[in-house]
Image (tube, rainbow, N blue to C red; front, side, top):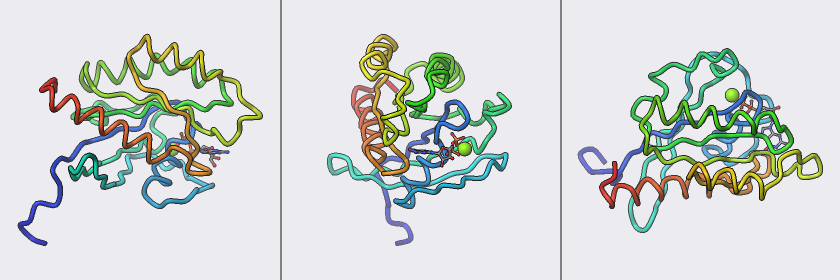
Length: 180
Ligand code: GDP
Ligand code: MG
């Protein structure tokens, strides 16, 4: 209703990672609750909004998708600006996409803000038979970098909402501790 506060907090969340890891599909699943097989590679930035209730607080996530910019290493600074949280995605069947995670995290910390909440997502967990990235190794790596880790699937929906929920909770915790 006009004039009424619709939410307690709104956070900008960015999705980043190598091309083909399933970033657009994750966003699509979060918003539409279904798998979108054929995502197009239109250049630009796409958004999605998602409402969550965390501990009684109404949270509105404004989620940004690179929409293909990362293929040309041309993700603009404005993409990162003001982000409270980042989902950094690799594909569990593609070791190279995992090796690039560190460099994406560095970009996020440098171009957004150093204490931004980061959730690393090992996507395509439905393809475990083709797994190329060990979960325990990924966990150790993420612990060292002090970022969260979850395996998810934009095809089955496994852990998609959980990933965004945990990320938003992490931002809220920082807000409570006034670290933002
Ligand atoms: P982006 O370049 O990171 O945005 O990746 P897309 O979202 O365009 O996905 C790249 C390809 O991976 C597409 O062919 C998708 O259908 C496929 N894909 C994305 N997520 C999943 C997943 O969780 N499981 C499987 N099996 N395929 C996926
Ligand atoms: Mg995409």
